[in-house]
Image 1: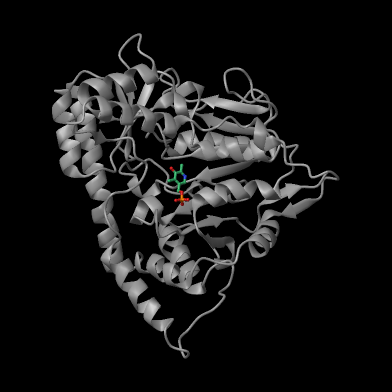
Image 2: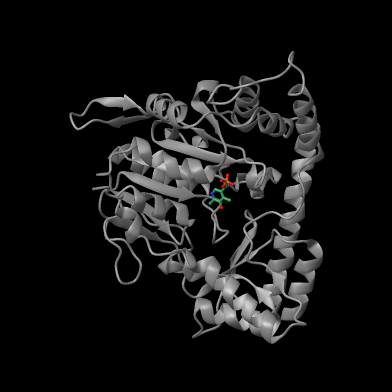
Length: 406
Ligand SMILES: *Cc1c(COP(=O)(O)O)cnc(C)c1O
């Protein structure tokens, strides 16, 4: 008999974005003239930097001629890009990094999901709550999450609540955990950790021999000095952390697709017998077996973001979104809302008025203000009572949205 992986049928259908779409469509039917502004999106709206488009055109032209044509490239990425990553994202911050510690991929969604392949299904997993849904769902697929409960929480996942009471800084778990997912700057709360706050986690992981899976997709949006751009800025992190970076939000590559994962050579995990095994070797094996490399043309586009011109263009993109974030923060504060985030991340986490749920607040903003947000409860139990405003829209729409809240 052909048997399925039954973990898949335990996972509740992700109804968040379909439910949002349903409610928006209904409003549009009821009020055909409503000028709806979408501030729920997690996708960028500005086009690619010119340097990246030019690099792709040039690379495409190379693909036209037999003398410059490239077929399969190295699965881990071309040296030109891995070198640019090491120099610009790490060496420039005083972090040592070798090319063979960097694995270029087609996205951090795939990487944060696939990384589970190299870990035993017996590991205890801790995930911040609320969170990017990929961490929970991929662990559920791998059978590491246990059973889903009535409230949607999985029996075997240790949730690390991030809420007003703890200032959105997760507390160390009481029980021992093996794999810890941290995403900072954070999606969806838009908050982040300082060096001192992240250090606690690195120290914990060193003491307990656990691994931190650090998603730094929003690193480029950091504006404050005391916020780490890489977990490897912390002493000892190379022994305990894998870092995920993406060009998606940084340089508008959401549709172009390029990211990378860092697995330091000295990072170890253990067999049941207690033998230490280098995770770099395992990830290399996994990556070269199940992935055949990011397209040459796209890797050239990513490389171009590290040129002086490219850096200036990326900075302008980020600056545009962070000005939107500032406008959203100011608008919501003026309207009397309690808000978090939006200073080191393109998301503002807004608290629903007293007694209102996430979906209640969402519906109020949709029906009364014609604004689409994302209900916080969709990101986990601790997201209840909040909605997420995204700064990835156009300036015009952002300003218009805040006018409606005055
Ligand atoms: C957008 C995002 C990513 C990036 O995903 P890609 O697959 O690289 O586009 C990763 N992590 C989080 C938390 C994100 O919000």
